[in-house]
Length: 520
Image (spheres, rainbow, N blue to C red):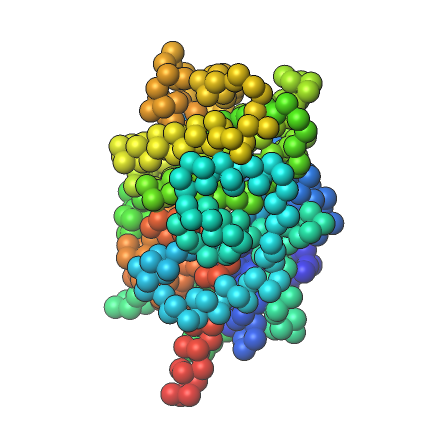
């Protein structure tokens, strides 16, 4: 790893990857086995940063709003506070660590090679996935889910199976986080160049009359603002890959002239290809939660157990005050815990539900031509009534868990579910208006207290912006490999599948490269 300041002003590689995140790192490691690779990351290194490394500092990472924070905050036009990664390793450096594969039906629907998918998951898991400890509070949640009828008990597994299970985690037994950046250990160091604090401003296309635009280079700036250029080597199979995430990938396509022509012209961007679907069908899986105060101390835990319901809601839980440090009550998923100052004797945890899909979609637009600025994004949470019904059923299941015998030790005796809803609804979870019937109507509660679980996706989806091989439609030598290509979020939590996809596509691309060399 090198700071981009030290990089040459002009350089050449077989593959150039934009975004050293959850997909970009495994992709770069794989491609480096048989080609020269440049991996450009706009953020810094996760190593040596205890806010990233230690499970107990989970909240401190998200509450860091400094210019070089690994978590760049943004707010959707819906009024929901969110964050995007700005660090080598991407979202795997700032998330709650849960590791669970996509369902077999998801894999089949994507048209992926099931054998290679399995091998790619295993390749990831050798370095970054572990079995969590599952102590008393999480065990009570698990048993409560089973009492609520979320059966069978599937024990510990990475697989997506209906019922209740213990999933994997990227935190080891000592509570230390392992991220997608660790997958660079697989790389051929002599063929891979990783540059940090390298912000890509534009992909350059070679345009000849009668031919499709061809990506051949890009412009990036280091942290001092100096402009650098990186180009593809001449040769068959050399390509650029955008892995900048669900916000960054459509944003960069637009900044490079590929997107809705009217929007590009409004920002004085030269149109390379009028592609109206770039930035469309953005989705964020809505998450709703209740905080349950405990009369007894609870362990510090993030997501370890999940209830995979038959009606499209996933029930998860986290406990302890590990996400308290630095929070101002305004950081989405776990902000309902409130500041410690609001409860000097804080102890307890969250029961949360996330819906699958979702069906509701929105869109992304440019705010400015500066790639460091967040684009404008609208997710349209619960616009489709099917999403709302899933939330209501999920919250009803959480009610059953809180009222179960298994969980009774960790709920203050006599506390009603309506009181728990009221405690959450009265916290500053988002910027949406509140309604008087929030705690008497689960439909209203879902809409008023919606938060993110950071599983947003879309904007460059398969079938509309990229094809089944993740090549950008209408141009050559450019692919997109990350969550922006998903039509629906995979499994209960997407990071396992995003890392898998980086490895999977790296193997496929090297195979294509070998075939083209043989033909030549």
